[in-house]
Image (tube, rainbow, N blue to C red; front, side, top):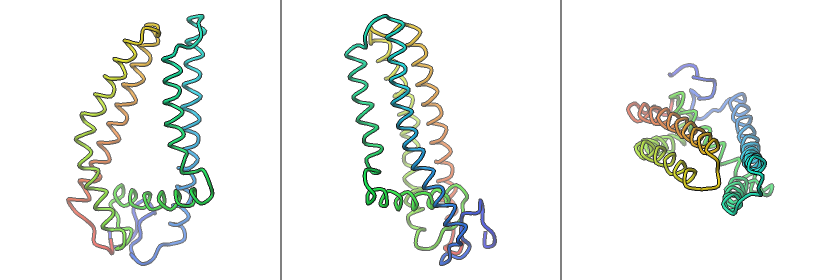
Length: 198
């Protein structure tokens, strides 16, 4: 790949980043920030909707289990959006995300993004490869654990347990598929690391 760029994001010259590349990366950073906020709001809204629907079906207020789970959801959401709490924190988050997007671009498209970042791309590839085996075990165990909690809650009707279990299994399957794809990209990079000139 000495000429041209896969996906329009990798640079053939390690010392030069074209304006359109920087613009694409900047758009990607803004998109991730927007997705982070929308996902957090969506998770909270979805959980509240489920609790309200279950309360209406059962003609009873939410149980202590539902309130405890809500507190966990709120803590996770707060942790997710905490880096966006101030302009300085948002700027630092944007720099980290920009760098991560460049690294992901190099792995996904198997292109060079410059000599300065080559070691970080290789380190990310090694990390992905080592996490792939854990994901094969971790995601199925997570699905089983959540299904066990749903089955033993005692306050969720059978339909809710079934729908919740199916949803968790589907989410874990999607996460496992993504993990395998990322591991394949990492193995490709490690099998043939690109020179700085890409």
